[in-house]
Image (cartoon, rainbow, N blue to C red; front, side, top):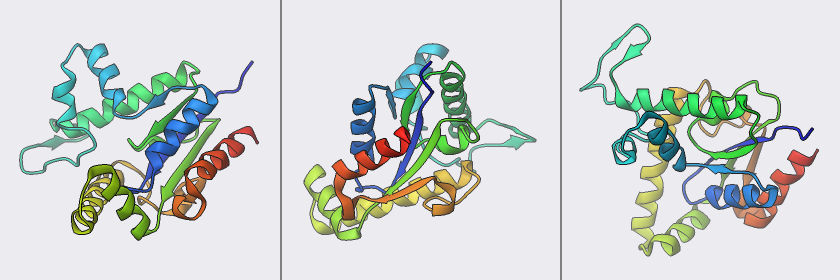
Length: 194
C-alpha cells in the first residue's frame, strides 16, 4: 500500500510558492488544491463558485457579521470551515495531494504524512517576479506584494494556531531566492521520499 502524502505550502507573495507547489504535484503525480477547492465545494453544496470567490481567504468583516458562541453568520468564516472540511474529507479518504494556502497545515494538523512548508523570498527577487508576472512598475509591484502579504498574514493568523511565516509552525522553510524554484521543489520531494 502506498503511504498517503499531504504537502501544505504557504508562501509569501512573489516567492514562487504556487509554481513550486504545481511542480511538486506534477512530479509526484498527485492533485494540487488551491482556488480550485472552491469549485469542489460549489459543486458539493450546489452554489455558484462566483459567490464563494468573493469571500475566499479574506478575514471576517466585523462590521457586518455576528457571532454567538462558535456560530457565525460571516461568509468568510463559513467558507473557511467548508474548506477545512473539504480538505479533511480528502485526507480521510486517503487521497494524497498538495495544497496551497488555506491554513491547510492547521486544518490537517496531526495527520500522518503531512509535510508543511513555508516558501519565502528576498524582497528584490519577489518584486522582480511580480513586475514580470503582472507587467507592473517597481513601486506598483512593491505595493501589490505588501498588500497581498498583509491579507495573507491576517487570514492565517485568524484561522491558524501559530503566526504566519513563523518557522516553528512549519516542517520546512525554503528561501526560493537562494536556491531557485527547481531546487526548492526537489528539496520538498526529497523530504517526502525520506
